[in-house]
Length: 84
Image (cartoon, rainbow, N blue to C red; front, side, top):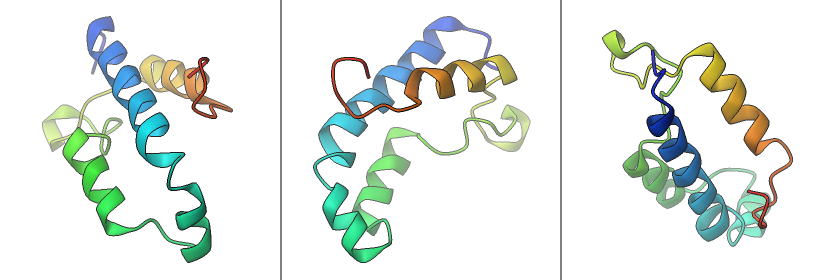
């Protein structure tokens, strides 16, 4: 399980950047198609944004329950502004 605060902070920083630079600019595109385009999914995959809650022994990131809660709280209502 990730209990290392620096790994959690890296995940948060990566996610903030992705939201600001990719997700928000493509919001209308995703809304129109009602699907997430493969190029966006590929970017998420490349950044390692999938599988953080899966235990490391199964190939995931091993984010602890506390880490998942912290991650969720940090990003609840995030609209890509300075608060994100």
